[in-house]
Image (tube, rainbow, N blue to C red; front, side, top):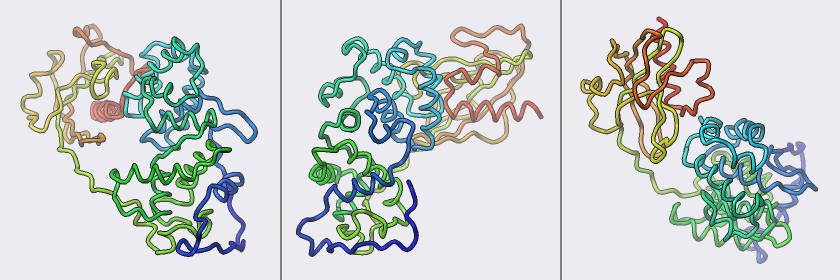
Length: 370
């Protein structure tokens, strides 16, 4: 977003109490035309949006930041430049390219969706929101975003940024998630028929830049003068949120076996469930009542395991995890047990290793090198 020059005069607007017209999309779109973000998946002014890029970015951006998504998006485009390439790719290649982004069911649905678009739509994404919702991994939000941004269909796109903007604009007192229906209704009333895609992206940009969670830049906001929370002076307190309940701590053990030739023992997790289809080092189930003294009964091979001091900690969406790490070395003649395989350390970056497993391996290797 380009910076406004200092000393610019902001034209006074009617207060939200006195204004009869209320907020509209026009000042927001005018602001967007000047300050829109340049993003690798976003069409430049005058260009036609690529539905494949829009879809791919929207799936990646679910519960993930723009900064984190950018390198993954560019990597995916290099590996899978279009929906046909993604549909034809091996599942392992897709999961490997996704590794580190988290919420791995998205990657499985992404691959399934690409196949469905090729098989049932000839490789062309449908423009109709209902047809989009019928595809794997595409719900109400994503279908609205694709229809609006890629095809300029009038649709109501509400993500976390939009929820923050609208809850402040109208001082929505009901906490999230209960206020979602009202926020969607309020947003729908502002969507312009001529530029719905730009409106959706403008709202996202506004929430990501000016209408930030803390210290919003209200004086520069195109809705300044129409925003109820800004007029009240309590914009930072919105949106109201119901306190989240922290999940119960789970524990488990991971076994890191390094062979003399520099290979490490790994296996693939079941397709269904948490981290489905991803690569892991062998380990125990994760549970609240895990006892580390029982862990060795689950060791993948019979070698001299050493229990390392400390733990590897990781936080998933619904629970925190604490792993006890057992490490060992073995001869290069050691064969992998059934369901597992040895992979060269140099080739680990080609495996679909989730972040928690990367942490476990790094922790073990650091200790083994001492």
